[in-house]
Length: 171
Image (cartoon, rainbow, N blue to C red; front, side, top):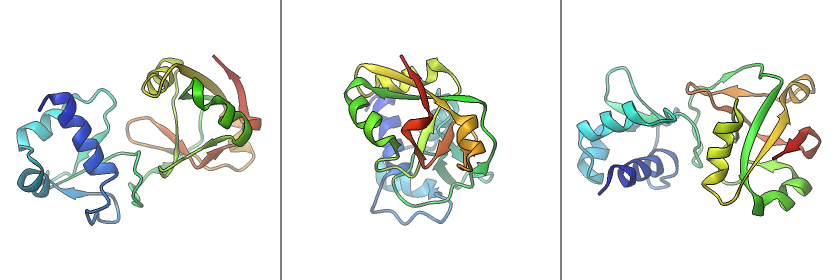
């Protein structure tokens, strides 16, 4: 299996696997991944070290591993509440725009809406889903209005919903 496919498999196992009993903070035993899912410790170390989005992390003792965000299973990955920059960006695909402009940006099957600090990061996200569109979000106004933001350890901003009124432009 290619390293790309191994990384995608790990992402699923750490973010979406409904058959695993994650602890409350989203940790999974490394030994489970090695014994039951075809990973070696060396492969896991390589994926954690080289993932360009820094999606994964080991516990200090290297016995457990987790995804930093993006879960569809209910876990608390110990995200810190923070005040966002004035503008954040959301990457999506053109075919989602009608729905977004009617309903806002919803979290779908995930726990949070993901927002980026740069247009480039958001465009990369949008590209995975089709023809990319980047939405600029008035995060300052959202925060001023009492909307809570969380910041993951790899710099992704998270919130539960973005109302249409906070979308200031799209490209």
